[in-house]
Image (cartoon, rainbow, N blue to C red; front, side):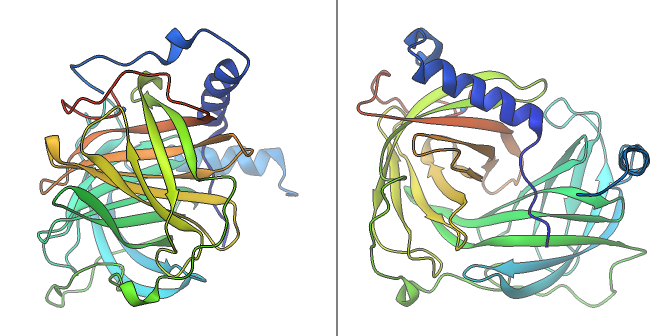
Length: 328
């Protein structure tokens, strides 16, 4: 399966912010955001034709089969069906709207399309925050990565993560909706946590800078402290993290089996919000990717876009607060 990456434009923004920080640019570029809001071988003609198909308005609207591939090893998970409606106005994006699952009771949320990328955020009645982020392979298929987490109490606990594939169909089945813990088909098994091997590239202090929709404007900056604490979801390289600049924001992280993607998710109780993010480690001190912040239990989004992270020896930002959301 093709693994989708963040768009060139998002990666360019993320790397530009990271390079500015590492090259000794003014730390004011990473100043605390303020108390009001803390966040081969394809012919060119074929590519252009495919992109033209993808960008047709309302191409997302309708019914889609959703198949999950679970960590570790991307084993087959559950199959669900989703129905998308176009409403516009979500995060300022004209190609956006709402979705729900007729095959998993109480699971619904919002979506946006930006170029060939599609992002879904949602929640279940049981308080599970969900995030799927992918891109069109062709106009009837979308593939990408997902994360689901239990967002309750004062921490975010991963339930499932991995890859997914959406295939457009004429209509969802008429069978009654099932219920359960996780639409992906697997809930957390604490007994599966592995040992704690050395992970030199992730544990430590990172400054994260968020970008916001629409237009990828620079958002908030925060400090995160990653700790190795055993595996998560069967992946041995993982642990916990918390923020020294945004009170009550903490969660879990792991590197996927290929060692090229960092998944991290968390919960901020000040606004009953879940944060979910995934992206590659560009180097030992630079990471970038895409994120979403989901309101629980409404399934609406506080904001989503790209992020950049730079590893530092100590946090240069202000002390913790607990107002609004981390990304804005």
